[in-house]
Length: 213
Image 1 (cartoon, rainbow, N blue to C red):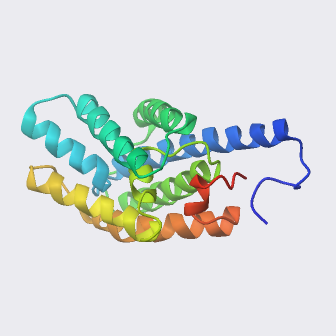
Image 2: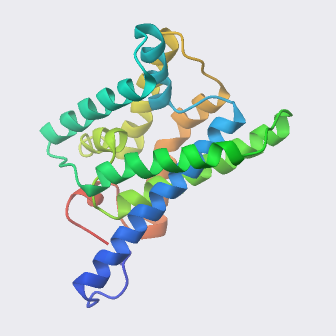
């Protein structure tokens, strides 16, 4: 049974559940991103690409991020993945949480605490992405672009492939990469796929096919 409680649950209550799942998932993503950045072991491929383009062009990070996000959403939309309220909410909430959390995170210099911080942050990111996708209220740029190819290519591979392309582009343009970047590339797609299935009883493709929780 998919997430969301009894099948005869009132529509309004089900929508409240979905909105709470979306908002909570985005907040968890923001916390995870903050921890990953604080670990200083390498960012995800999407952020690496944005950073590399921003450094090369001299354009502000947030402007590059917005342009790439719009482009990916347009590509996904052209392939049938319509944006939704979650598409906008994800960008806002994740950004706000990262901005609020980063100043309050303790500095970690030794390698062991940095690895532990990265591990917690990566896990939070995976759970957060799975939760807000399971709400079926619209995917963010990276997730929408990956879902646009699922089917025929499973999300667990397209999502990791997108981060690989982003990291490679960012690195070629001078952005820093690290062991954490490689871990995200290899693990984020399969991990999110597994979380959606185990926690919410859905497939990634079902999150955009009307199978709302």
